[in-house]
Length: 429
Image 1 (cartoon, rainbow, N blue to C red):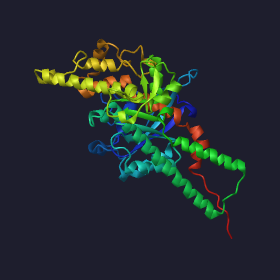
Image 2: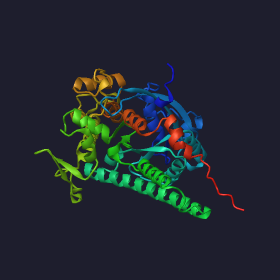
Image 3: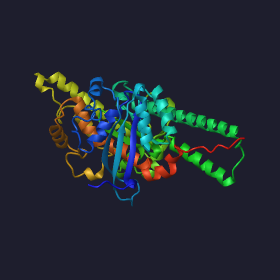
Image 4: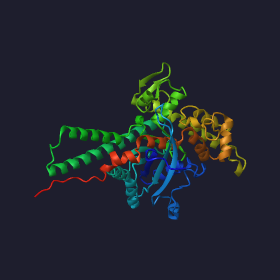
């Protein structure tokens, strides 16, 4: 097939601190094109093509790949588009920072991956500044959200507070970075004697450009430029996609444009009368009395799924009679909790509804059929097989990139031209 026009093309790079999950995320995106098997996605490290990279378990050189994605714009009247995403996976270790700089200069958008447990690290701050200097449009990908449940044992409300604080810390770092860059530019202008010069229209254009820049570098889950995910288990979602899912499934009778404004905030949904109420932070220690909307509708099904598979694995371990009997099946105790959790808040594309292998399972027989086809018997394999059908990671990440990152035509004319601009210095005698 011929490549699409530039308007249906995206140039993206994945950047992050070391071990925050860049290559694992790339595996899930590559798997969506059928290049690698679902069973190996997340562990194969497909883009680490060097022998030394596989041996050390770190990325040392940039690797590029082209992916096809069926992008469905959020507007109802818009037709789905076949987009080609040229993806570059870059190293995270500081010793290979030159590779990261090269990837940033070659792309128009960046997937900024941040570990939900470790948060902002030193290398993350450096990458932010480099991406800003290259005038890229970023999408924040908060990875390893599952660790908040499995490793830290946080409740849904506690996990929400942790994620909210992480988004705020990234926004604070971006705001400080922009303020510092503008102060430096103003000092240069003062030295050149350019203060007060320029017409009102020029000043207005500069003001609008600054506001646009602040909007690009402000991460707001309700806008969809933040993705919550677990690259290892292949699931991910954005707040707008979750809002559309909850409305379509009639879980909540609130239209998506309004619902997404409340899903990530200190509010809760009162089921008795369908009202949205203020959530008090002093209730954050209990998930039973009151949960925020994000905790209830975004995190609670995932937490139930992890708990159900953990229960199933424990049941298999206590009842096995031989080494080959430790297999989780659809009727294993605990799997009913997984199946029930997957019936609400699924962000899977409606085009997969008739595909038994890729659609979200609705019955025990559907679950068993998927487990048999994939060969998933361990807890990790079952989680990957089920949750990637419940909230597909590739759809969430690539949809966000297609919506927020510009195509090469737009980027070259409105954004990236500022990267290589030359300042006109006044001639001094």
